[in-house]
Image (cartoon, rainbow, N blue to C red; front, top):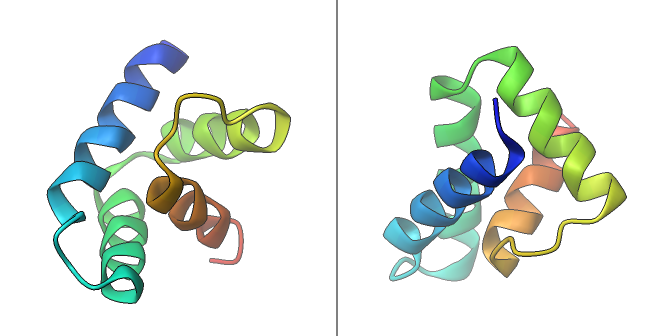
Length: 70
């Protein structure tokens, strides 16, 4: 999948949970990606964050880094 599309998608998810308290938002973003994205998408966005991460919302960056621990 196109990386720019993944960035758009993760930012949309992050924007949805933006009104939550920070810790709950991060957990919710992490859980959403883990439950609804396939392994290839998760692997691609994790790799992108490791190499650059430019353009990804701050809460989403933290959530993606949490995906590596799962």
